[in-house]
Image 1: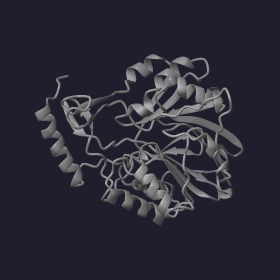
Image 2 (image 1 turned 90 degrees about the vertical axis):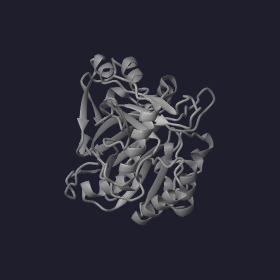
Image 3 (image 1 turned 180 degrees about the vertical axis):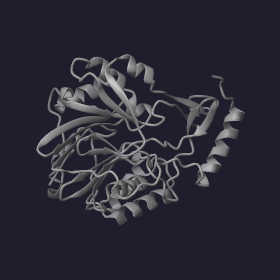
Image 4 (image 1 turned 60 degrees about the horizontal axis):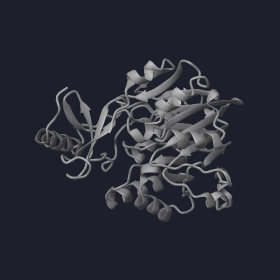
Length: 357
């Protein structure tokens, strides 16, 4: 596979950016009828944030009374919770009295994430599925290590759900002189053959809304509708010999329908835009009421007008709770906190959210 030179890269990226900004290259999933996913209501949903960018051990007793469903982990002498620029979830649904568990994204550091799983009592033997939101290293880097070190705990043939291009080679274009003199920096690639060589998981690629365990749905490819959620102009993907702007057509988020409460939407990075993600979830489930929006919103470094538009549109949806984390960025987090003070929750690594009917 030949390498693309700097001039070819700039020419290709400029053309790709122009197309995307014109709205002609968006590849979110095809339009679907409202309620097409037919997601059953769950009696309980337990979301454990195994790792995230931020940890504060003194927040365990600072939740307002209305946030009693938020359980923080308090470290004690001899323990230490790990945080990093990565994200990993352990999620449980309870449907018809039966509990189902899966992991979604895996973070970066094996030792830190594994220690967190031990402290948080995550039992890998009970996992029914694995899911990956998209092919960025801060979400997949630790996957191989978890699989290799837990062969005797994980069920052989456990499905690993991914979206299209999860195994693509990705890059970021930084100012010349940062890391790589050309400005084009390699973000790595999750390799399907390495995963399958472990002879443990069964890779399942999805494009449509798909159940990962009972009561939990992957969104499938997310429809792009807003004028301002056009992705990042510095993220690229290699397709054959071409370097193209990466709009993450196959990035997956999660949606749940909690009995008596409404939708809980969980993203990892929301490269498709968190507003697009929530609206897509509402459409596929056929439920308008949003109980909580949780996850990375990928607004780090975004211009303030984009942040303000995002916050305004989420506020108009009137979710009961909003929990920006990971790649949301301080400016966006602060704006959500200011504009939605009664709904805003600051996330920390090790936090467990328990939603129930």
